[in-house]
Image 1: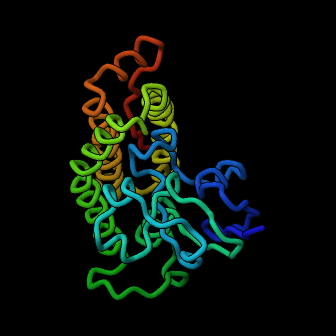
Image 2 (image 1 turned 60 degrees about the vertical axis):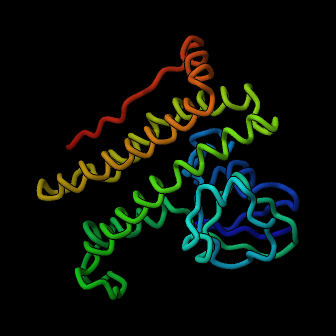
Length: 239
């Protein structure tokens, strides 16, 4: 039975299950805002070790992930299958962002890890935030084309699209709650950072929502809305 380490916590996995499936089974944190259908990027992880135990990168991952990210071991957990009984270690993108944020604005100086960034840990955090935003926006057209292609060849069905729309709407309040918990209680001087994070999160949600609507001509999204699934805006409140 493969050992799967997610953000430092170890779990038992099963050959032939996806990384996202294993994480959800153990209630370990990996995002799945589109329901695990490869229509967003919230399940992005970095494979620290054990890549040879995983399935090859597929067309969905190649559409979302830049060449640089692919070379650095980034994968979409919803698309990756465990194919060998070997240890696997990964870090989620959300966890990396949390660590960088804490280093920049929360942790005490004596506990900070070293950084080579010329602007220190604050610069390291904002560089990460900016690069992730650019990578997401850059991947959106390719991801849209991939989604349309999967609809045409039958891999992405109406049921799976409606499931993705529903999951996306349901996850929005949780994303807002995570942001609020992260920034709650920070000094007023850090308020611009909180607003920047909220804007980026909303932008990511808007991008994925547009991909889903464009790929389906809006029909699936509208149908889901009629069934009671409605967009939920992220609101960041400062304590």
